[in-house]
Structure formats: structure tokens, C-alpha cells
Length: 143
Picture 1 (cartoon, rainbow, N blue to C red):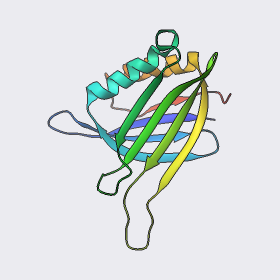
Picture 2 (picture 1 turned 60 degrees about the vertical axis):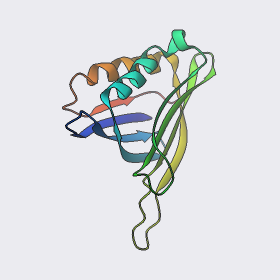
Picture 3 (picture 1 turned 30 degrees about the vertical axis):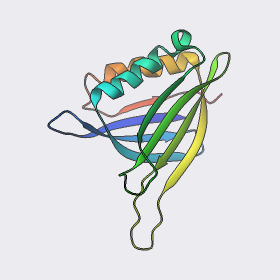
């Protein structure tokens, strides 16, 4: 079953968050931590909540970093209108870390989600941001 999970790992003195994202389309899964300010994460969550019908056929993007080696990591969670009642979520992560003989870990896959489930995901994320003590997890039906 497709899901997304966010866990707060750490918070800096200036309120910057370190968050771990785990995402799956039911067949593939990725895990990557990244840094973000609460207002940016809240903006992403609100855009998800309002995606349909307010944003309609647009995109909502959560993006951190770059796949260039000098960056800590790269996280992309991009929601795009697919067709009536259905949107596509693109997940792409890269840890950008290369140790001795190990390679950089890169993951890239897609999942479908309904407008209603996406709105619900956003609503629950907005609520979670008020109290991030426990991990946030949201599952949806594969379409």
C-alpha cells in the first residue's frame, strides 16, 4: 500500500527542522532526511490540503537540496494533476554521500493518489505540524 511518513529528528535554535521522509508506492520505497523551516513545510502541507479544487491542475512541490555532491541530500515530492479525480506523486531522493567503495543512493518512482486523499493528507499534515512529537504516516489506496 502506498504511504508517506515524516519524522522530526531534530530542531535547530532558529527553528529549522531535520525531518526524515519515508515514501512508498507499494512496490518501491525510499528514505531520506532533509532540512526545512517550519513555515516552508507548513506551506507545502496547506497547498496539499487546498489542491483540489482551489489549485486544480497545478503542481505542489516539496524540494530540498540538489543532486550535486556538495549538497547534503536531495528530496523531491512533486504532486501533479494527472486526470479528473487523480493526481500523480513523484518521489526522488539522493543521499549524495559516497563512502569508500559505496555509491550514492538514488531513488526515483511515482504513485497515484486521488484528489480527496491528497486533500486529506494535507489536512493531517497541517495538524501534525502543531505537535510533531510522534511520527506522521499517511496511507492511501493504489489507483
